[in-house]
Length: 282
Length: 273
Image (cartoon, rainbow over all chains, first blue to last red; front, side):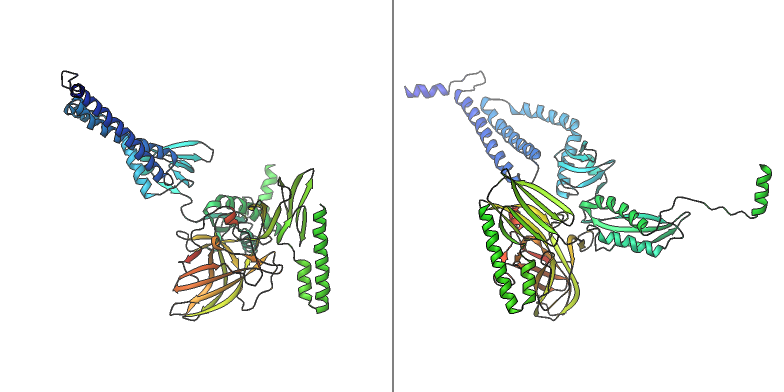
């Protein structure tokens, strides 16, 4: 009785000789690979949870799981007498087609991996790539997301990031900015320098070291130009730059020093003749 | 309210008693300290605290508690929904104002030459930031933060590899300096030169995550040490001890904000002169 029951499993179901036991083994391998894929992808996601963004974590988990299931499927196929050589030929052709079609896709992935290890930017950095400037919101496998100062979502493919010049404005702790402040020729430049230095030194984020520099830079057409160079923490650089300029202007005005309008003084060789010709013409 | 009045009456009685005692002892500085202290501490509310133009009020109106702080022309208000709890007013790690951009504090002072393989203790001063914490069911929550001391920042190291630090100019002393406890605290620093050459020291950089601030009615203090290993490399560390016996330990901002502090020392790799 039991022998006849066992023999049922070995009865060929198809012309190619696939038995019931072959079908069972096929499904066991397939289900095992799905379970193994699930377990491994969960563990990998847990391990990398604090290292990469959520979106990339999900993608990595899915890729790992799909690879394991695909391997399990290929291992299980011979049990149902599927000729893998045919699939491999078809797979090879498919791979060539996908390779040509997905060239830029792979290029983006490779660029993303290189950027991940090179780390020229990180999430939260203020960067400029091409004509896009803003804060890095996310670094994904295929692209980098930047929020511009206008609040616009901008997706830059990693290949573009990799081949472009990246300006990271906060990579260094401090950053310098510069103003040119023009004063009248009759104003005291030393007094103006003293006033400007006072304003800069009172601002908490105008760094004590490297020391700010204030000096007469140019004797211009309408003004004596004073150059003001200040270092500020990169994180608050823009705020300091905005605040200081107006404070300098107000302080100079309080000190009786004015910022002149462009002007030109004309000297005539013979004032008498000039006024005479002026009268005649009238 | 009755309890609050009772506490106030008791405080007043204690003040009068202390004043009489001190007048009998002719101790003028202690009398001044007693009159002008009493800002730091733990208070039940409603409460009114006032000192040198700084006022802290928690008032109750129909079961709603309002916290109001006036300081240097700046006013801060918020509502508190926990009746019958306490507030802690104490100095905190001085790296948070006007905006938290660094956890490091640099104290700059006149250059001192330290003999090889020796140690010496000095007093310095550091800026004070005052934190107000709400205590509710043994939990502390930061409520307010302010300072009477102007802030300044600097860069320790060069612009490429340096660190932004909160900057403070101080002067080395061998005796305990007299300071306004709402503006300045006293830092006891032991410089240990374990190198075989003379060390020239003019600055100290500390990591605020290891700061241990203690206070009493007359003094705010921290105790730290600097170990010089070789030219341009030293380690600074705070010690969890009060400068004087009986000082209270301040509630710390980094612990109330649940910031994990892994290392409590700072390695000064970019020089100290």
